[in-house]
Image (cartoon, rainbow, N blue to C red; front, side, top):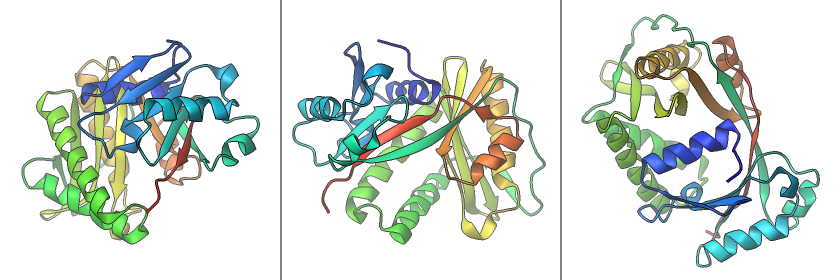
Amino acid sequence: MRSCPPGWATDLAILEHTGSAIEDHGDHVVVRSPDHPDFHWGNFVVVTDDDAVDDAERWVGAFRAAFPHVGWVAVGLPRMPVDPGRWNGLGLDLVLDEVLVTETLPRRTPVPEGYGVRPLDGGDWEQDLARAVAANGQTDEHDPTEFERFARAQVGARRDLCARGAGAWFGAFRGEVLVADLGIVRCGRTARYQDVSTDEAHRGRGLASHLLGVAARWAADGGCDRWVIVTGASNPAGRVYRSLGFEPGTAAVQAYRKPPR
């Protein structure tokens, strides 16, 4: 298998941590998550040949051959195609993600006044699930029943990662109410952040910055010396991450078509 840029490489490492099968086909990888059949980005294809990124028909065909009975199409790309129209013409949207990397321990900012920070435990996970379900309810991005089933499976996988010491999830609390959280997973000597989230009413107070530093220290204590975070190219949170020492790496692209509702 050709080497993947850090965004996709850490994605694949985390999926392996949580039981997914990674099939190497030389110029592409097929990822299967039999325990999570509703997880679109757990059952997908990643193109590893830079020179073949524009061959949209080929890669949609490879996805269909691997997953003939699903309603979505999900293909990971190592760069933005030269001709996005070839993908758009097949009904797929292209989403550019910014991959930020640092080999310097991200600095830890002070915890904002009035908040407590700790690893998620016990009933905290149910709050984490409820926040995800509520966020999807606001956007109506995914079918509510399917999304709750998916989100519950994700919480179970995260708890297992934490129990095995491969990852950790940290939350910021106002009293006993979870208002911000994130995860981090060790992928060899690289640590990959997961799902940085702050409730709207608590944004702009430095909670995410503090949690990023807490998680970075946890990973460093476990032997990591590189940190990777992935965010939407237009997400203003990227400015926060760069202020903590992260620098742009090789971007990642998702080619995706939703299943019919």
